Every structure is written in structure tokens, then in C-alpha cells.
Amino acid sequence: MVEPPASEGEISPNTVPLTAFVSFPSPYTQSLIVKALISCLSSISISLLPPDDEDPPRLQWADYDLISFDKPHASPSTHLISSYIYRKALIRKHQLHLTITEYLAKCDHRGVKSVLKDGGVPKGWVVDLQFADELDELLMDDLYELAEGMQSNEEKSDAEKSWYILKPGFADRAQGIRMFSSEYELRAIFESFEPPSSDEEDEDDDDEEAGAEKGDEEDVEAFERRLVEKTAKMGVEDEEEGGTGVMTSQLRHFVIQQEYMPRPMLFDIHQSEATSETPSKGRKFHLRAYVLLTGDYTLHLSRTLLALFSSDAYTHPTSSTAYDDDALRPHLTNTCLQTDELGQTIPDEELVKLFWELEGLDALALGADGEYGSEGKVGKEWLKSTFEKVGEVVAESVRAGVECGSFGLQLMPNAFEIFGVDLLLSFPPTLSSDPADNQLPIPTVTLLEFNASPDFVQSGDRLKPLLADMFKGVVHLAIAPFFGIHTRTPADDEERETRNAGDVMGWRKIGEGQVRGPSG
Image 1 (cartoon, one colour):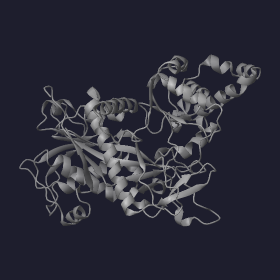
Image 2 (tube, helix red, strand yellow; image 1 turned 30 degrees about the vertical axis):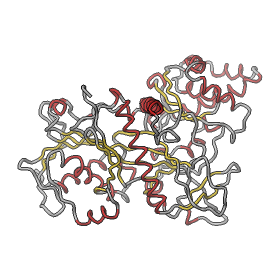
Image 3 (cartoon, helix red, strand yellow; image 1 turned 180 degrees about the horizontal axis):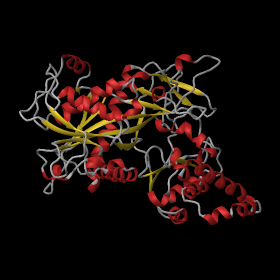
Image 4 (cartoon, helix red, strand yellow; image 1 turned 120 degrees about the vertical axis):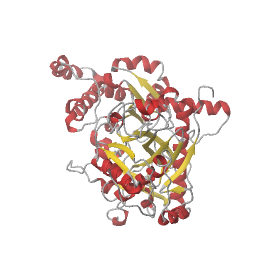
């Protein structure tokens, strides 16, 4: 039994101590949750051991695979869990794409405007295949628009081409993400995801000789061999080394983004060190938003909004981007992939910034000439407006899941969950042509994906105190109300609420709704 001394700002206890099971693989996350519960609850009993399925603790705040669901499902008024049982409509890339596509079709039919319509989500296709030779039929049928787009690229330079991005629906940590601009690049990508057979290895030398006799096809075959060699090094055969390869037959579902964002917003995180001899170099980044979904349902967005940067300066995609891991790095912002020029992992603190720390930096765009130009400087009002737009995109994405997710998203009154939502900022299609106008436009905010059990450790020690407050907010918003425990807001948090109207311990309410029952 843990019984910390009561003080102002704590949650007054029930007559019966709350029992809780807490368990996460990451010690970083585990310690944050345990400290939040102990500091906020005057009387709580915490177990780190897997619960008895027939009689689990009343609160289970644990990794999805460790939660006992039977009792909470049977007793929704007494048992609270930290994950919804069904939420694949949000966390699986292909299902999220299909869900939002259906939602936008309904919006069009109703004549309702949607923030997801123009740039809020990438346009594209869902692909279901096990082997590369199934691609021919798909390109003639479901992917005919993609085939036409790739064909139109044939006479264009790399800078003029439309680029597409391929993402496995079930993978994470950047596994299987690839970029392409032509059919033979796409075909070679899928072929590289197939495990090599012994016959293929024996015939490597013969294939190389035959390729030299095929005239115009030689370049394509050489490209395909390079791609297979590259992905073999970082993929299936070297899984223990943390490669990004996948096996198509095991995943099957892929999302092809209709067009890789051509105008991402860039920042030089070392702008203060830039000189005339070493000018600013923009890096691509994505936002990691922490979103709290409670019951059925209320939605909150945390002000602990992160900007996760690539380790390499951004460049225009080229034909090598499709098969060269190094050429892909400027376009991937996953912290698990960032290394320095020697291949050593870069400390997360160097590439992870608070969104609010962008104030004062120049938002850079990469021109056709390869030079970085400023489109304006980040100010407080820009940060505030962009944060609000992030909330709108996230809120409507969840609404799409609720309305069109079918069995892929089933909300429960006795569940809550923290999602890590990734979003990309890009410049709007039209920018001011007046050089004197240095007003930074509000960016296009594009949803990339929802992540269950997000990797909080990427925030590092520097931002850990902010995450500690964020988890305390979860206790106040999701746990205390469910168990009828009364809360009091500390004086310092009252001051924060005055500055940030509508915030509760750093959480901004961005949406709510009610799932229709069987008779609804």
C-alpha cells in the first residue's frame, strides 16, 4: 500500500483504496505513470505483476498485451482500463485511410465542410498484395490513376516529378517506408520485400550477364539489383540490426500516398550558429501530438507537442531515394532511425524540440535551385493558431473513426488511451509574392498516423518534467472522475489555466461526442 502524505492539489481518497496494475516495457514510461498515480492519489495500491483474469485490479494502466479485458468488459462501471479493445480504424494505416475516405465521401454527400478535405490527410490508395507479380493487375484496375501518374513522370526531371510514398499498414518504426516515382521503382521495391530463394542466389551471375544483352532494359535491371542489394542489407535478412525492410507476404496491406508532400516546412535547429560561410540548412520534421481519448468519448490534446527532426538536411527526392537508405534519410523523421555521419545513434535531445521552442526561427522552403529561403519568422500567434489547427485535424480524424470506423473503433465508457499522433506541416499552395511581406502563413496540417503505446522515451530527460505533468493530467481527467474521486486544482495550475483558457493541467479539450447504441 502506498500512502503519500496529503497536500493541496491532491485527489482526496475514497473510503476503499484504489487498486491498480501498472506495467509497460519502457522503464521511462513506467516510472512516469507510477509517480503520477502516487503523487495524485492519497491512497492507492499498485501491483506490477500480471493480474488474475477473473479478479483484476479496478484500474489497469498497462501495455495492451498485458491488460485483462474480460472483467472490465463485464463490469463497465467498476473497472477502468488504459486501452480500447478495438481501435484498428485509427492505428492501422490502411484502415485509417479507408475510414477517412468513407467519412469524406459522407461529408461531400451532406454538403459539410471538413478540415481533412484540403490537405488534412494525404490522398492515395490502399494496396492488398502478397507478391510482386500481383502488381500488374492492380495497376490496370485499382491503381490505374497511379499508373497514369507514374507514366507522366517518364519525361520529367527529378525536380519536376511527382513522388509517391509507400507505407505498410501494420508496420511501425519506419519499417517498409519507401519513396518512388516510376513503375519499375515501385515493382523493384515490392520485389525487394520478397525473401530471396536459393535458386535466385545461384542465378545472380547469369542474370547479370543476361542484363547486359537487353539494351534499353539494362538500366532498369541494374536499378532493381541495386535496390534488392540495398534493402537486403537493411531489411529482412538483417532484422537484428534494426533495418527498415519488411516481408510483403506477412504484411499484405500497404498505403500509397498519392503525392509526397512537395513543400514541407523546414527549420534549421542550429540557426543561431549559421553564418554567411555556413548558411542555414533546413531539416524536415513532423509533429508528435499526444492525444487523450476517454470514455465514449471526450478528446484532449496535450500542450506537450513535440517537433521531431531528421538528422540530415532536406533535399529534393531523386531516383536514388527509392533504393538508397542514405538518400531516404532526409525524408524520414523517425527518431529511431537518426544517426550521425559515423552511423552512431544521435541523442534524442538534439533532434527533439518542443513545438513552442520554434518561436523566433525562420520557416524555410527548399527552392528548385536547391537553396533554402525564409518564408517568415515564427511568432507566438502563429504557434497558437497552428496548435489550434492541429487540434481540429486530430478531432475530426477521431470523429471519422467514430462515424465510419465500424468494428475497427469501438469506444467504451470505462476505457481511456493516450495516442501519439504524427502530423506534417507544409506551406499552403499559394504564398505571398511580395518580398516585403514576411508574415508566415498558417501551414497546411496533414495527418500522418495514430500510434498506440507511443514511445515517450524519445522526449529524453530534458522534457521529462513536462511529461510528468502530462501524466498527472491523465489521472485528473480520466481516472479520478471514473472512480468518483474529487480533485482540487493547485494554485499554480489555476494560473496556467488563466493563461491558457480551456486547459486542464496542460490538456486542451478538442472534441467530444457520443457513440450511437444499437437503437441509435
